[in-house]
View 1 (cartoon, rainbow, N blue to C red):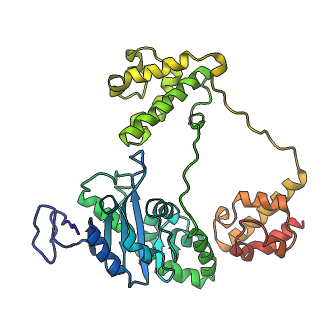
View 2 (cartoon, rainbow, N blue to C red; view 1 turned 45 degrees about the horizontal axis):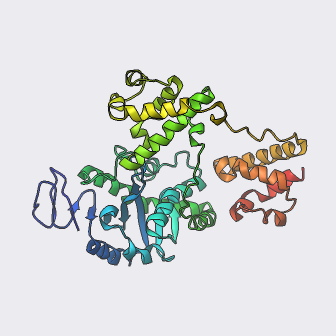
View 3 (tube, one colour; view 1 turned 60 degrees about the vertical axis):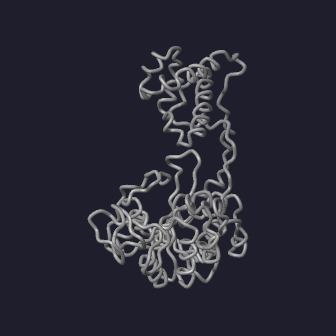
Length: 405
């Protein structure tokens, strides 16, 4: 177990052994322990295993690194917070029985990404989930970010200084560890207040159904997308030859980012890459003059970039990329349009009555599916794929009424 004491603060239980270190733990708005060893992780697993509820969060490196990975796992009980260095410990096997025990409530804010990361990096599937973001959506909260909810319900203002920090750097500054600990330290009190309000409004069962569906979330690797460069913003005016340059530059940037393990935009921003494709410079001097291009690009990678441009220039007309044509608009369907409009009005009416965001209550994709299938009874409605029981309970009667005109 490795712990740190912030400068200017007292360490508890032992004399500080270095400028920023202590043998056991330090107190900072409540105890936080920084775990960097397998033995330390086993100790944490023993201590949290007896808890009925745990607050959990992760910090990943996707914003700064090419290879996204979990860097920290934060766990809070009602009396302690543990920040686990996932780059040092690497495996969370001692915590698996706790995370996968349905009798232990795992409280996460906006759990989708965390669940995918825990599944991908550690093979863990959380059970007993309580998502405070989803709970807030069922209560119709206008601001569902963690900081907004903690400030409203608990009167505590969370810092946002390290939202886009590089969590893969080592050693981590004390301030970043403190910031990470704050993300879980207040989750259990927040959960208590949200749960009580859900129960008061008769919506706790609705939220639980959504939590159970979330528990099935797993990581799925993204499919290869050879046309990703065509979807970059600001490329609609590029001609086929310029698109060929952009394709070459995009592939070159991905290779460099992968080799250096940095986010692609840290090699070359989209805006600069698109402008290079537009101008197609032929010399390093002309490359350096492209707006937005880093000064170091021509010096470090000038030959590679110019070679990519030259390859695109050498392509035959037949080999130049073109944008795929869309499927086009479907033929007019007045009955579909009228049904969809009635469904939208019914959804909006119920959303207003419940004080819930209308897109959360029922997104447009579900409205369109209902307009196509036109289930004319509650029994038929229950057979529509993807429709939740709580949605049928909340607005099923209005849906059937709208479909039947």
